Length: 479
Ligand SMILES: *Cc1c(COP(=O)(O)O)cnc(C)c1O
Image 1 (tube, helix red, strand yellow):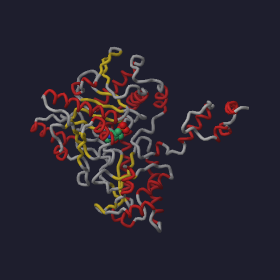
Image 2 (spheres, rainbow, N blue to C red; image 1 turned 180 degrees about the vertical axis):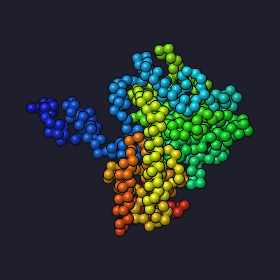
Image 3 (cartoon, helix red, strand yellow; image 1 turned 90 degrees about the vertical axis):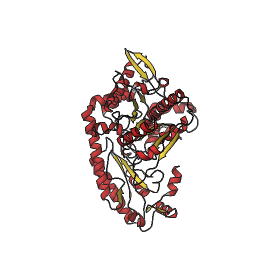
Image 4 (cartoon, rainbow, N blue to C red; image 1 turned 60 degrees about the vertical axis):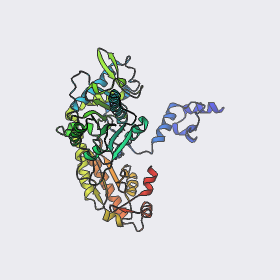
């Protein structure tokens, strides 16, 4: 048998009896010969086999559980390209309905049948679109006034998600950051306004700050901004990055004003694949009114009598997430979403309380306003502890849990914290298992005679700021 025939014979051999299974997988060149589908499937599947189970990944905000019908619907539409609207007009209409639903959840005042908004691959694209629209509006106004428009900036707290750094870099818009501190754990409106000038295209408060889980006070910012705009004659608007909060606040705190009910909030973005309960990637951005969506960004298309506005950075993209989102809206309804988000919050609050009671720990904040929170080691405990949160992360990983330890952004970067995001799919029972694993790991750490490697490294770089030890080497490695 020549080599080719030998490989072909694999088709008849058991998967793990095949020649392929004792040959290394391709890393540089495409293999010359085909492989039987069962064997190819197993090889690819096995590549990912030792990874964390997605539902045990408590680091992510992104959906890791959908029911069987949602999964079936999404799998059945895996071959549909969203951008082929002529061929799949119903998908375009469905996306526009989802935009309407989001706009109304955020109390849009827009009267038009189809609200001004866009589908995105996630909050990143949605934030970009919101940011670009603010920049183009500012630029048009500056042009009309005969003023220079070459030095735009935007203002955000140091708790920004990395997409805003990308936005600044890619569009060359200066990012001005308001420092967070233990006294000011969210964006301070006064500090934000102190950074504004005639070149400020927008201020970006965050609902569900990725680092801490907290919400910036948009209502207070709006009020302060209203006075500021009246005084200066600028029209600085607000774009709310509601990646998490966009699907939490409407269901759990409908009275709280953070959305289009506020005067200067002209656009809001969110991640459909976070608490929108859809598998990745899906995001939404909505403008308060069509007039805030610059013409240069929007293309109007008429399908099935529906005049649909199209906006986006991508061209081709999967349609499955749109079907998944529309399914979730119908399947769960307002009450269903509320129940799911309530459970995530309740379980998060329960874990927050339990972790707060553990001897080594202190919670960063007393409130849990989104289903996630962070905690750190008590300074007194940290002084003599022979271990660090990085050791706890590694210990929990042995039971499959991914609970990340990291340092907070600048000014707070002496704080090593741990975070858990509670999503649909994390029950009270699983939380109890996790808490038990945590306590067991702590008990083992407390028996240590000698410090761990990360503790030794920490002591080497030791500097005491705010009485908490730094972890400089890890910080450097991350950057
Ligand atoms: C997750 C997140 C983003 C980025 O969202 P993707 O959906 O992952 O692209 C932006 N801003 C905040 C506040 C986030 O939490």
